[in-house]
Image (tube, rainbow, N blue to C red):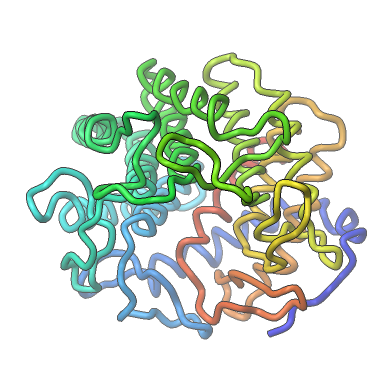
Length: 386
């Protein structure tokens, strides 16, 4: 498939109803698809990916973070009143995750990958996975404030703060520890702690989020070059040449707005810098963010994943929420690009995951992992822009 190369300048005219249009797409197509074809009715659990025709790939391994992301999606849809069955689907998914991925070998924490029938395929304890399990638990907890879910949240946080904690600050990549260290797991634990505070109103989660904000300021963010560094040595020294992922620059801009909301700590300077840097790495034909650049503003990889497009929309939404002039229009234009280039898939409720610089689709399947990004962006848009 080759995507259309409509000029980005035309985005404004199509943006007036984009939030309502995307919300209906999620309610009418995405949520039904991923809870039916995207759910394994035989063994339980969410399917990791669909084929290009929208049929479940039942032989694909089941990654823990994907299970957690799908639980989040249905719990969030229930929280927003978008999908009456969302709560039951989220609880069903959580029950499967806890029964199969939590400590199946007698050691604490969640394993990394399951087989389609629920056996352990990879027993590593991955920090990135645990961030999304916490996000899922917090979002489910927000629905009913169930004491058992809170117990699971507390147990997971104890594991993160003891077993996964690095003596150099932040978290190891996982157990066993591996290199290089990445900012990405730290970012998603930051996200999960903000969500846990929103769900519980417990100040301990403010403090935990604050620890990740301190790590961002001290080690992850290069204030001189105004770039977020991706890869590090064990002691957080930067691995050169620095890799810049504009999608993560944008994602941190959105998260910093969330941290400011729950703490009152001003983050406007860093949000503005992160967003400005992210916008340096765009595809000229479509206006979409590319996958990777260097610290000097040069594009290193011209491929374009779906998820950076949702994150640049969320960054602009965060700026709109804080009152920046023109940010709401930029957010809507980013959502138009997302819909035009990635969501216009022949499978209703599906998406294209990545394109090359010529607009050729590089991923034949429809990965479940992208639903979290799409739903979160549309949910944020409805709350701020609608």
